[in-house]
Image 1 (tube, rainbow, N blue to C red):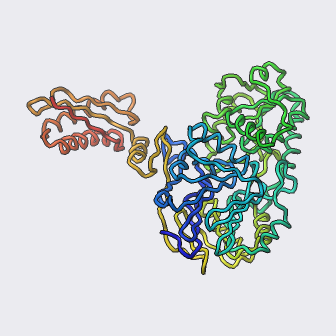
Image 2: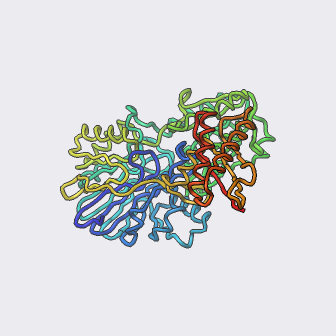
Image 3: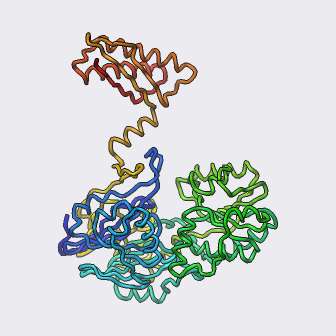
Length: 548
């Protein structure tokens, strides 16, 4: 599909899911991409930590792609850049803080000379073919959250990115109500917007209120170490915690590579100038326990993050003891409940106190609740609402809210929906290829490919490996060797393997090794039949035949 005299919106990620945001806009034969994010692994993909969008649609049209414009620096908006951007061979455009994060990623992958990264000042503009872009600062839980005004021959788009309203932002200056109203006065064809918190009947809240809440919690602890875990990307929260540490007479300690990276990029781009200089881990452990405030990654229970290792007592330097306190200055992301629970149980077992947002006001969301969405629609007044950045239930609710706010038209996309916004839009005109790729070690695989299908089957059913050696007479030269992995036989495993070997030998003796595929299949079926009789399961069964 090539856009002609029309304006098309086509998401390849982030519609029907929270994460992995990739959005295309097409006009007069050309395309631009907004954001290039990733998401993290889920139980459907054993052994996978990073999930990437399948960009096959735009890779086939890369000659018509003009550039990638980034709204902000969260992983679900920039995380796929090191893996996919080089193949697209177009420039990246980002504001200074976001560009700093991207530059670090490109440098780590040795791509700094292959991918062009162009820095756009806050509030700046750029022109790509028939598209004009203007950055509009909005509050979010990372510095330099931005909406984009996208000018086209067919009308203006207001692409919100991730955002919230904050009456007392602790970092940056978001657009005012008057400025957003003026944008609405200019005429907006479509608002493409964040749906994450649409079910929240209350506003997200201000970072200033969190500062007060954290100050109260930490000041109340007269003894013991305090560890606060939060999203490293929330530089404003890091600044808040620096101020809390100073006010409470505690030294600041950073735990986690992403903490160090965010602080480094923030300082290099003019933020966190007042953050107290962090002390090293050895110094922290030598100080009285009530003189230390640890800022730590791992709020979502990530197994290799600093908090998980501290909870297990396996961190190389940092230790917590009974009476110490861990504060979760973060939201529990759906899907992470079990991993977070494991870490909290490990902390509780060791006598460490825990406070979450349920016990004290120690976190606010970076996404708009219903009052904020209603305010934005009052200011922007688009002709069309296109909800994105949410699961289907979030986006459907967002569409209803938009219509209740007086928006004449709304359409809910899924990844791959090609929606004509103008003329005469919105109209679904096709469904294009969209899917997932998996980063497995250093290899990128299709999510529905043979490797993951086999791995999933092995994780569910286990594996049996059979080795058969066939003599020149066409008969087994020895008893077949059988091994089982992940098959539910334990005390009787030797008897089970012996019976499998016997079944394999009988099947081999009856078969014709010259018909290689049929021969191996007969052995496989015989062995798996035994496994089914013993366990009620059908393990993946691999047969290797060697002929002398």
